[in-house]
Length: 469
Image (cartoon, rainbow, N blue to C red; front, top):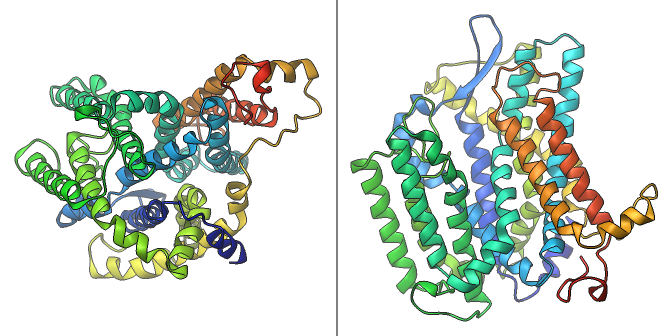
């Protein structure tokens, strides 16, 4: 608590505290939502299996409009990335490396832990399908990080487009999402896969415009407008248009009501994002802009701001490990013979949700206390190359290949995470995930770590606009 208090007290007056609060609230809703809808039961062979409760709780589908908060993550991510990139003007490579330290390091801990436990379980004779299923569940949060890392890699380019074309960029991206939806509805599913990128990029791009309003960036004209004012005359139309679009898309259009994927549906709104999810994001944006000023005043109080700081200090750890925490609870109850499996939606099932959430929260709190130090560690380059690295190699890494190697490191990490997410949930893998995907991830993470350890060359030794990381 002392560290949280110190961080809160050192907050500069210029910080947009509402962004941190939104991120904190969103992560709490995601964690609680996953825990609530997860169903763990025994199959015909007596083995543990898991699924979502949403197909049985059709009345709860409209409630997903309230708990689907991933668009908020990308919106505040756009705001935060634009703000931090501004401090690295001319040094996009240094900015990417610093962001990789904050994002990749906690994920590496999870990936290594899952691979190690899975390998140990295989040596002990646990069935390969059970090992893979457990790893598949535990790595569910990875798919979000995969998309976000790809967005981060593209941020320097996308922000340059934002500076030139403003809000025309997200409008073009929304148009691409619409084309992807048409392809999916027409049975050409592979043409719609681009929405995984276009949808989240569009929302992330709007975060740039919100940040430019706070930074007093040039406003521009027409579609080149760069600012997104937090005023009722802007917020109310966004809220109303978003809600109207959501109602039309789901009640009259071809989109499902649920904003969370439900197995068996012809179309999913979240993976990849659809126009319906874009409509929800628009309504959320309007509500956020309406609440911004009163929320900022409320966050000037010590207690609310310390809460936001405390959650944000462990936010990635909590997100990455919340499914693992639930699996640990399930495993312990299974070994003790105390795991109840009441019918989904019954009174007993709902009552069981209370101790279920409490136990999961306690385990997650313990994991966060142990693992948060990997997230809290300073992500800046330590400027201390490893002793085994030849001086000639270090000298090369300081200069021109640095940018290309950074992109390669990000690419390997994303491909590794994607390979795990796309692999079948019942595969036979010694490490609980495809060996090639794990190797690609670890190689990419190691390359990024190496680049962070080697300081960039001084501006005079490289290009005129480069800067030290």
